Length: 636
Image 1 (cartoon, one colour):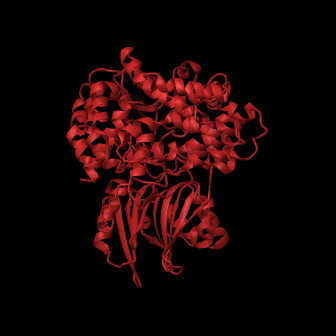
Image 2 (image 1 turned 135 degrees about the horizontal axis):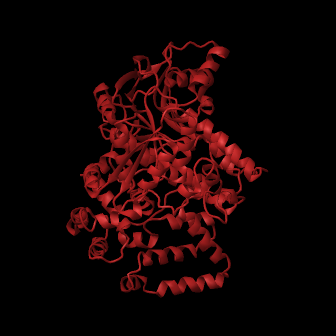
Image 3 (image 1 turned 90 degrees about the vertical axis):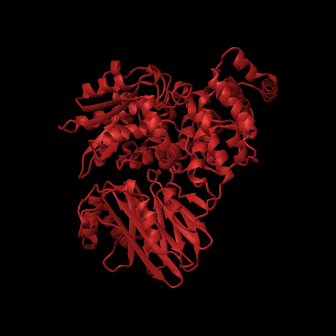
């Protein structure tokens, strides 16, 4: 696990001092070693930089940038190829290749030398890499199938820059910080900016399952998709019984989890006590004699605290368990760091406990497994249930009835009713139902349900015109053959999962030099689960039907059956008390008016209603707060 960065400067003004600044900004991602290399071509300067967190082959033989013996190919790489030893053996036996290290970096490099970019299909893991081909005059960027590892690039005015994080690009004098206003709207809508877009103009995220080729002679970019979950969701459903599906899922889990325990440093597991993380911990603990190290974050507020359940499960499994209770004081220490850690506006407040549990885990281990993607694979989120419920109601309405209902909702003063009856978030819910009445696809319903700030509120809140960005949500028409559950899961796997969940975990773990691994994201698991019928995932008994059946084989139902809480944070309480000054300072009317992006009266009224005890949605204010703190850090 590492940080990578570099440039192709067609003005030849960049040098090694710039590359060093770009690279060393990523020291938190790789505190163990660093490497820099500059190449001079006619009228082009190429730089490759790397910060290393040593996980496999801790010797200097794993240092990057790394090159082939003939010095044609040069690589910087971030991630882990879990089946690297098998690929290495294949290259040695079939092609008589020589290896001087036991690092997966050298395996990628030699695999590329032998098979070209098609080598990516052999890799089982998480990765983002850049390869400079001196002979073909190309720079190749590639990102893993699901998007576990990040990769940004900037292309403007004769400069191509790339990096694991945006903060590295700021170190290059050619990088222009021009705000992408469409990106601001997208952030306020979802709490993240979906790939390929970013908060800046001319700056992009390489999409998961894609590679990018920069032709240095033609000065052109070409992007190719090499993998898509839609290729599996759109295949015919498997003719398989529930019991046989359960056996195959267990086999795939055991195989995937075993791969992700390969390491030359200590490994642990994040354990929340839910079905996803319990599946990971239980299967791993059953197949090893040494006690598995598990880590949990809890809260004093009981509505958010799952720590006691996690401890019960850890005790039952026989794990070496560590628990920490997150307090407002902890949040007070972490919140000022958020704009640095997430150097693009990011609104998921569960970043706070994720950073905290990463800090605690790093004291004992260098690698931590996380159970993300369980909800996207097995329909665990309540937004799927909400979308289905409203969809079923709307399906029974005629077009005329829908129009009448829409008009009725238009004239009901929900904001006033919300205050009179202390009804939480009533106005936002009404706006979402109105929006759904204008659509006829289940993916739209899920999208609207998951929005943090509605279109109507954003039109009032923002001074700039609202335009939508093309995203993976636009692929909804590709799901027309799928059942309702699978249609939603297929799109969420390409949007919320990589751009919110995986970004959250990558930045949180890497901020403390901890490698996060995602065992449920093995592409073999997706290839199987995508072809199962929706009722295997969400049934009459509730969500995660198949996953729960598997977990019950390892843990008793009495430990597992309880209402889902999710990984939430009690900010509704915190910001009325200990953290109140954040809203007063960053959502100050003079500051907002001077900035010229927001309707300051709307924001301040929302802030004051919340602070005065009205049932306002504090998550809207959190979204704006995180944006304002980001602006203060990166745009001032």
